[in-house]
Image (cartoon, rainbow, N blue to C red; front, side, top):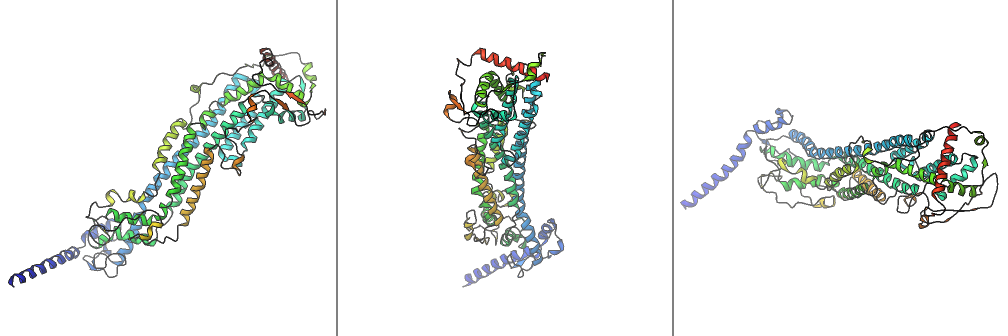
Length: 560
């Protein structure tokens, strides 16, 4: 009996000791006062010792170092602190891809400028006055390419622009190589209408059309994708936390203050559940976000390979010069086809009266393309290095939204092990960690989330990502995704100006489908075409005569 009495006394003392220890901690709220004032709040808001916590709405209502006024201020602080790491990560992501956008955009624009300068310098050296007198044609060509890059098909129809360029070039060259004749505007319209059938420039227009379409579509769409990323992140970052999220954040971050445990950090799994509840809508971005990034990565591979903007623009002067040489070497055959199809032109009286011929400075052949002689772009790097860099950033950005809780709930923000705040006391967190996304929050033990009301802003950004992904995939196949009808846009294997059928590579007949010479009506006439392999007709002698005719035409034009 005496032993039992002793045990009862000991148990009573232990209970009283524990109660006194907890109460002893709250007799002095100095630690709370120091921590509270360090947040910028008035230290006089904190009681000197623990008070009755019954008025508290979020934290435990027992003996407390918190007042209702403190709880309200700390709720606002918790909102700021829960948002800060997410905002910082979002800002870093925006900055990263704004910079990459500027790098690519500046690079593409500078390539266009350098290509124009390179063509000008090369053509002045090679063609002299012939080029100078027709320089506006090439200037307009590059201006149109730049406008297409900036504004797309809304500003420039690339197909029509390229067709007009080659038709205009043919008209100017045709007049020069046939300066002994007079041509009316109606006659030259007949010539222009049959540029593709005549193929005076060989296969260059068709190939260049394919290359330009693919490269420009890929470049424009990729830059648009880089523009979209910071916009999406910025709009999503404007989404405010729900009241239940703010309440849960307050409970996790600052309720330990009320019990005098200012250094106590939340358990990791507790933090994960709170953040997954607060960022439930953002996590739903992840599927379309990752699809979008995969499409960007695929298009980046195209930019490095067959749709390489740099490899198309760098030697474009050589390609156009090659086309001009094709016209020079086949000028007699081309002229004969035109005369048969459009009618025999009248001799030029002015040409017959001019006999005094002077040198125009025409040098004849173009100089071979040397990559080492290319000007350096403002971006200071090549397209390959730019794409390698951005691909690393794109891969790193995958699963950005779904991993935000793990990123935030790490390091100094949490306490390892079981010596952590579980929402009610310093102890192990027992609840199961729920999954990401709005639908999973139905079972979140720490944040009340209405899964029937998805955030409108985030849903609109999901739609924007989905639409851009579709456009990236179209660009990947060489189609302009910003036209009304992708089926009609070019860029595929069989696209381009000129004939698209296999017969383009063989000899064939060309039929003019319009009346030949408006001044001299005639039935449709059959003009025998000659392919590049028709060796008997396209002899060295005819090539020499063609060049001589061109030189004479240039000399005569110079005297006008």
